Image (cartoon, rainbow, N blue to C red):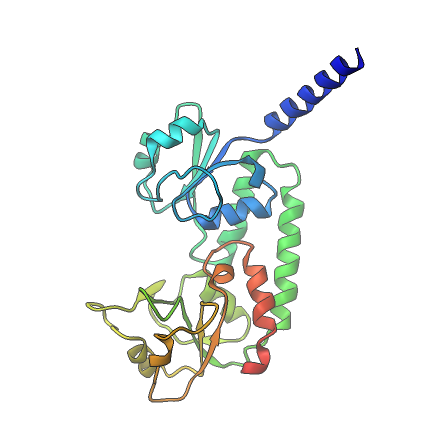
Length: 263
């Protein structure tokens, strides 16, 4: 009899947990980071092809895999506003809801995303979690002083690098830490053939920054080809912490605070 009661209790716990945990699909790694920060990793049943989690792949932002999404029977799908409502409606099961998040334009949008996720998933403690994020963000920002140094923010020095300009979360963040971001392009400037600026050296010679922040863990052979006319300090940062508009930025700020002696 005790075994039966114990079995029924375990079944009730499992059922209650399932009811409290909606089945979630994340269509971008930065959304996955936000879900994890809110303690919702256990609820994720599918992720985009760009994600690191070992879960079924549901395509990309602009080409979601309807067949896989249907098979996962999600309750909620979180994607970005890069895809249209019309396109998302076509791949969203009737029983599910989708939400198009922002995040790439400012730090404030990161907080907005957390609130949307918290409300729609029924998390009673999301306000407290967001308050914790904001408190830690303010604490870390106050530890870092850019001293008015002119800076460029570069995604990498290999592949298809791009520089962060106005209306991006990193421009917003570094400006608040007393760096003078010299990139004038709205949002992201791609550095490649056919664009206004084709090489990293051209970018540096145009803006003459004091510091070049490269969002890579370490310099590679392509980085050694950076030879601007005006000397520039090159500081590498872990792109996994900076290239996602999500609370994982806190880890990036801890790294940045430890490198202040370099400028």
